[in-house]
Image 1 (cartoon, rainbow, N blue to C red):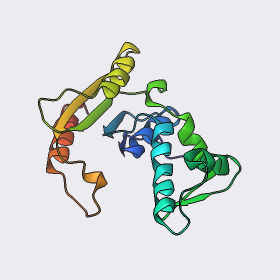
Image 2 (image 1 turned 45 degrees about the vertical axis):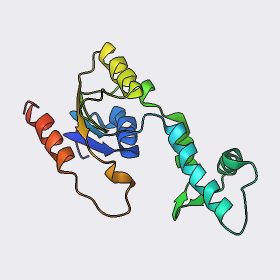
Image 3 (image 1 turned 180 degrees about the horizontal axis):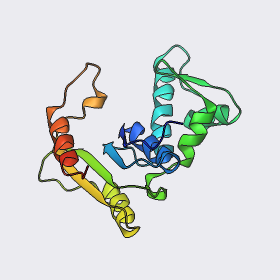
Image 4 (image 1 turned 90 degrees about the horizontal axis):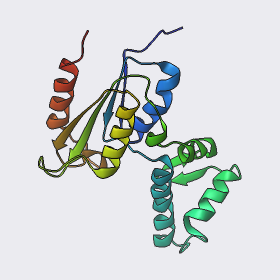
Length: 174
């Protein structure tokens, strides 16, 4: 047995998956970088990549759009989307998870990328964070003005995200 992990760190969808795993793993802390808050919405956006690809390809538009693709997944058929195979079980799990419905078992450090440092935490993130805090969960947020580096095709470094992470983690008791 591996024992209790010191912490879990997740970026975007990995943040939502870290939240989902945290109940079972009982980490000491969670570090979330720009976490996806709703698995169902994320899956819909991912399926739209397939619909758009089909529309641009020789096949024309996908019959039924994302609804038809969801039906295929629910029927047990994996889908290839943007070079990745999406397993039906993963799609079903994504459809079922929402950060607002998860109560993390530990303190959460949350770093959100914003266009400008004057911008507040986005409304959906603020609602989730406030909901956790009403449950007694400590949530520390940091807003980092930065480009959304996860959406580029090239490898990009984000010194601002790294600095915000170090600053948050330096305040963690040993």
